[in-house]
Amino acid sequence: MADRQLHILYFAWVREKIGLSEEWIPAPTPDVRIMDLVALLTARSNGHAEAFADHHRIRAAVDQVFVPLDTPLGDARELALFPPVTGG
Amino acid sequence: MILISVQEADFDTAAELAALEAQGGGGIASFTGIVRGEGNLLDMRLDHYPGMTEAQIERIAREAAARWPALLGIRIIHRIGTLTPGARIVFVGTASRHRTAALESCAWLIDWLKTHAPFWKKERFADGREQWVEARLEDIARTGASAN
Image (cartoon, rainbow over all chains, first blue to last red; front, side):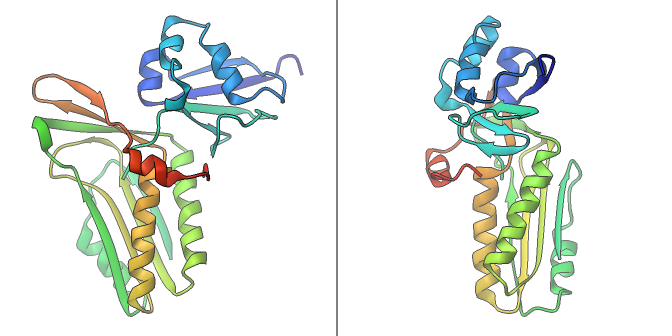
């Protein structure tokens, strides 16, 4: 359990500010909400801090399903963090 | 028929419409999105979330089929990669027994693609400027309480 990893993906300007398209971190406990994890991620680098300075501009998907940021991570394997989408 | 494509290649609108006409219904509706060349736009690059994009579009196409049982066909094409002004970027086509289901579901699907499909556009301008397209407030508002 201690070595379970969470795969984090970044897209668009979140990816550019952080300078990474993905990273792996030790999986937090299931009660940790996405917004709590985002707050923790800001400590990893200046790029992370800049990308997550305003969490109202961040959207998330857990295991490829959109979820609100106050969702607990549960047993998520993949978390994606990105700006509001602009397709179509 | 539900057919989803996320691709770099261009598509043939007439061929797509003909395939929908062959579904045996009484009406076809379609929407084609074109890259606008405003503000000396050189090109735009579409970023997406591989794997999730196709699954998410298929999920919503199935929801449309459930909402409009008269639908006989749904065709969605979304391009990725680098696109220049005038290029086709997205196609939504629907076939149904009568016009109402085709027209309504087509409008609903393109609205949904704008607000719920994991694509991001980055614009590049003639003066060297680059910027990510910001989501429109009205599109964000339309997302409402449902996150999917």
